[in-house]
Every structure is written in structure tokens, then in C-alpha cells.
Length: 195
Ligand SMILES: [Mg+2]
Image 1 (cartoon, protein in one colour):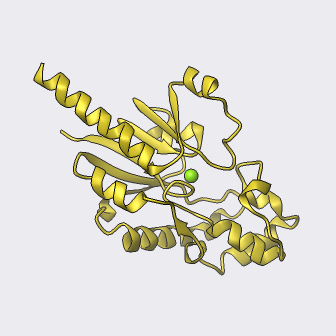
Image 2: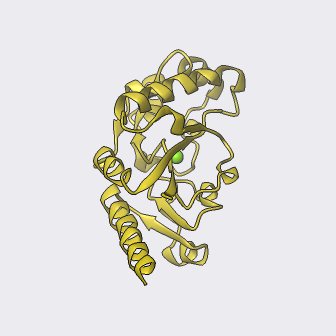
């Protein structure tokens, strides 16, 4: 049986759309280096006004895919069962957030056509998922996996390798690095099953 991988969507498969909307709304030029906390919306002073604007837009019209993500996921699919797990509820506007489901679904469908929509999981508490491997930019979302890969992002740069090591977490900076780690896993498995 193939091992399962949970892959996060925002900041791992794609990035940039939410920050684009913040800059568009506020007339600012923030870059990722300006963000210190996980929630980018803390950059704007009138959060509720921003969210009113946000729900009229689709952030995925303004985002980009991370380098190599499509090629690597396509490659890994031969060896693993890949699930995309992505949160969709913004706490400040829970009633309006349903639209995120459609936007995320369509983006994944259009950009990763080789992954079945049946493998999309829309969930905020990813700890509930029991996968062999988890790839996420948020530390809490890596719980309940044997191999935990933290994708480097603006809000987790400060976490030391020592601290991550104490949690059994490996930092990854690119999809090519992920490919190397997981293909090593495949070859090690192959060796142990032949013993
Ligand atoms: Mg994320």
C-alpha cells in the first residue's frame, strides 16, 4: 500500500494572493519580509473593512505556484497517495468563508489536474488527519505524522533547527528538497522490504 502524504495549499503549493489583496485594499507595498505574524490581515488597521473587500475577490487570481511544485507532486504521485489539506475558515468572517471552498477547489483542479478532487480535504484542524507524511508551513498542522516537513515561510523563519529537531520536524526550503527526502524514503523502504 502506498504511504499517504498530506500537503498544505497556502504558502506550500501557492503564495502571494492574500498579500496582493491586502496591498490592493490598503494602497500599500508590503512584501513578505514585512510580515512577522502568521495572520497577514494584522497588517491592515480596519480588518473588517478589508474582509468586506476580500470576499468580493478571489485571492487565487493573484497568486503564483511555488517553484517545481507541479513537477514534483506529479512525480511523487507514482510512489505516494497525495492529499491536499487546506483550511478555509477565516475566524472573523465565518459566514462568508464558504466561497473559499469553491475558489480553492477550482485552483487545485486547474493547476494540479493529476490529483483527484476526491483527494482534496477542506479542514481547519489538520491534527485530525492521520497521514504518514505531512508538509505544511504551520508547525501545529504537522502533528500526527511520522515524517513532518515544515515548509519555510515568512512566519516560521525564526524557528531554530534545534527546536524543530526536538519536535521531530525537518525544515524544507523547496520542493526539490522535498523530492530528495521522500525519494530517499522510497529507496530505504525498498531496501528494508528486500531484507
Ligand atoms: Mg499554509
